[in-house]
Amino acid sequence: MANNDGVQENIAGLLCYAPFIGFIASVVFLIIDKRKFVRFHAIQSLAFWVFLMVLFAVFSIVLWFLAGFISLAALAVWIILMVKAYQHVLFKLPVLGDLADKWSN
Image (cartoon, rainbow, N blue to C red; front, side, top):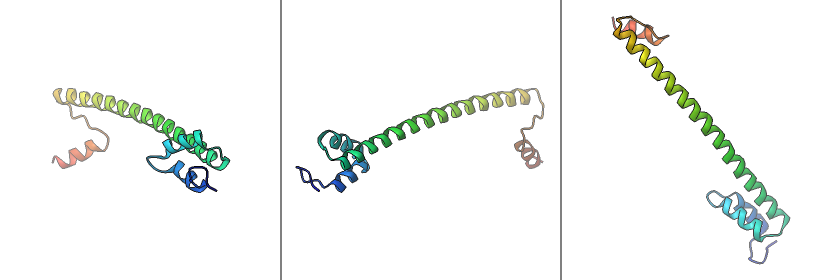
């Protein structure tokens, strides 16, 4: 069934999920289209976009936190390694230290 501008319901529903234009199409159809099928897909698409944005925000914060924690831990280990080397102590890291010991002979 087409509305006044000639867009069929299934095409309008599809456009709500289309890459790059889906968000805008959903907002437009939600404002101008009164058909239940089209409004359902517009609302569902917008809800999915919001869900994805929240999900991406949470993961970016978590990953940023982990990256920051790993960087600080790596800096601390690096400083310990520098101090131990300066003190002329053969300080071995787990696994890597054994490999370095084996390969340096």
